[in-house]
Image (cartoon, rainbow, N blue to C red; front, side, top):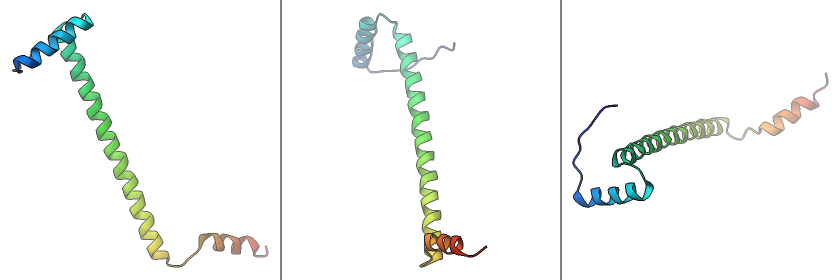
Length: 86
């Protein structure tokens, strides 16, 4: 592990120490858990943003295809091909 130094407001340290005492943990372990949760939350937000961008891109493609096809009706086209003699 790597040791770091940080500056936090005294009030924050008091609150952290109270939580650490209530949870029977050290201040360091409490801060490690908080850092891990922050990393996981950040990862989740990045993945969600990417998912939304992919959905937005797919919608844009569908909109462009819809605009390009005009009044073309895919269902009618399939029916027409099904009804053609073989």
